[in-house]
Amino acid sequence: MKKKLLALAGTVVLALSMAAGCGASVSAQSLLQEADDNVKNAKSVDGHMKMDMNAVSDTVESGETASADESLTLGMDMDMQATQDPSAAYMKGKVSMLGMDIDTEIYTVPEDGQTCTYLGMLGQWMVEKSSAVEEAAQQLDGTSSSLLAHAKDLQVEKGTQDVDGKKAYIITGTLQGEDLKDLADSAQGAMSSLTGTTEDMDYSNLSVDVEYAVSVDDKMPLYVDLKFKGLAAEGVRFDTFNMRMDYKSFDSVEKIEVPADVKEQAQDIS
Image (spheres, rainbow, N blue to C red):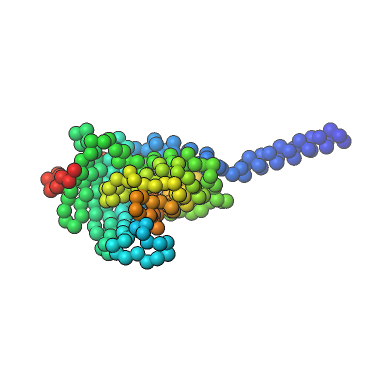
């Protein structure tokens, strides 16, 4: 009888351990690591980006209504492509500012040892050349790498969700601290061609609400949604700074080239 009970107990333990293994939940750390590895191996990305920013003079008290001279609202709703080698990016869509929705195109490409950003708005093209070697394709891996560094503060929602017909894990959480600079910089990089440099940014009170979707099947990112709070610069605070990137596909963009007529028209503003 004792042998039978021991055998039965062993069977139960084995069954329970197998059940536990089958139902084991994934961690934010493991998912972000897989997504980061996969994205770094991707040659290109095709996606869609939305960004909303409202900057207000720090002379305006929180809750007060700022005048047009005391605030700036800027939005981007653009398709985006980027390649890893060479590091290049192309964006096309609408930029909202000064009460207008402006058709906009942006190329960021390497040329003769420089990084050149071509900006087309209101029927005109401008080019800015920089001697610094900038990573135009940071949209490929900048966000996943930054989130991976803070994986301990993120969690995976129970179950899965449908994202455009794909089963996905959803990673969420709120991150805080000055060490979020890399994450903020990766978001601001997409807007830098319009707003200029961000060297004077103050990250001391920064927090970020994160939502990041990873495909169950191939562990590639499907979207990232970031809402920044407490971001500031000299004389300015950002009451709104939100960014969402939807990844349509990877390894589908062969090359990004600036058309010859754009190069001919572009006025150098370096």
